[in-house]
Image (cartoon, rainbow, N blue to C red; front, side, top):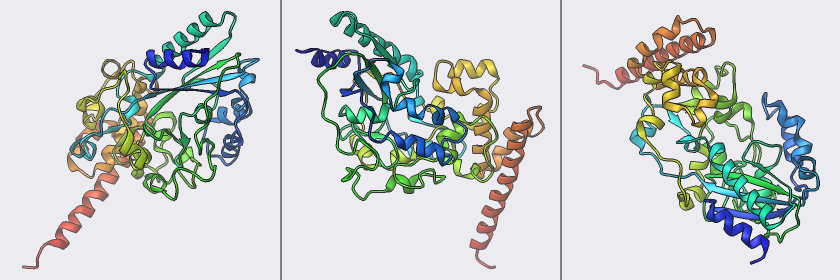
Length: 367
């Protein structure tokens, strides 16, 4: 086998489900990120706008970059039963977070692949990224044949769906390249999604204002994971019981529903009480208990305070009177931000409970 084929085989041996190679030329759709940032879609992630030009220019990240090795690993495990996912007193956590932080899993595999290339090609220079560097992983993955960019901005593999974690190796060597997947650039026509727009319709807060555009200001994943301040009151009802991330646009996608399959080397596992936790229990976690339960997972990076903030909102959305006792100590607690969210949640509980009572009374027969 030539070096390109050996790289793909070694990637598979290391546990990657997908591997492809693309030239390190700027992608045709690199302007999408700059335009989205100009519209304010990056919310307060200002670094996205500042690094937009660099992200589309691999040789600005690794001088002399000639190739991008794109790798993918499935994080699909299962679809939780409705009894858990739709229980208003339990929180929902996005599937990518059901276990160890993927950065800690993928980065060593990427580095091992880089060391393999060094042994095969002495003097080769490489740089590895797993969602941590200024590189447009999805676009280069598409150019490397790993899939197309769907209307929800996710990379979709035709035989694996979009529940895929991506990593890349920038390399200063020229290799044999894979054919790009049709639709690998956002907006490219004809597109594999055809006329389907289920993902746009499924987004709870309207964060997909048009195909291939994501407005982070309204995205539940951004609001529950990245956003550090108060969640805008008008968006809180949209969270439902999501407390860390959101899978709605993916769950609505026919490609995802039909083709998702577990990784060849799984590292995630759905545990009901951990990944569909009882909201009241989360509000009782002190810092030590939080780290014991979620240390080493993506939730640790977001931190206990934001997880409690999200759980408070979810309890307010539950409409269940039994949620009130869990909120009460936060309604008078020392943290001003959490106190405000708890007071909002209590008022929402009252409104929802009142609406339910009114509906119940209106349904009763007149005696």
